[in-house]
Image (cartoon, rainbow, N blue to C red; front, side, top):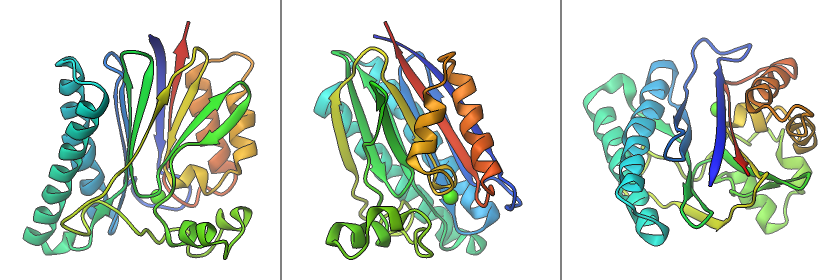
Length: 246
Ligand code: CA
């Protein structure tokens, strides 16, 4: 399996600093988007701890030949370690109290399978045969209301409480991840993004940009970030695009 990657992270139009972080090990097929919270410096630290602890650890596991449930378990251990590290750092440095981060991990595995591990509201999408599907499920109060039928999905995107998370790294000793795994097809495009992208752009707009006639992944990532900025850029924006090649 071969693939091509491009990523872009941008401060947006309103925020002072960028609390998003991304990790990409293109050779081993390991990609992460993390969206930090807890105030400027603290949020940056939390998302950085997540990408720096989980990313290289999963890369090593892939290199050691781990796959399937073994890789899934290793990724979960690394996410748990990052969770503890963020909590300890917040305990020791009062100005970092309350910091946390999302983490959305994509690993491409032998046998043409993908693995997503997810905590928070950064998203993993799959664009296949012209259709865009959100693979991951947000860990937010608003998503819970959608699940209960109390809110229509189209009311969720710009809901005033859309940023309230029900799960994040750094908030509780036990962290639970959601796992999504399935087959990969040639031509598939994976998009990992922070809510500064998915909150600013409807899925139809994301789909339109991924339909790019040139098929260039850097143009897609740049185009997504530019469109989110044009729509207001109210939050930090991160887009990471991975395209599966023949
Ligand atoms: Ca955000």
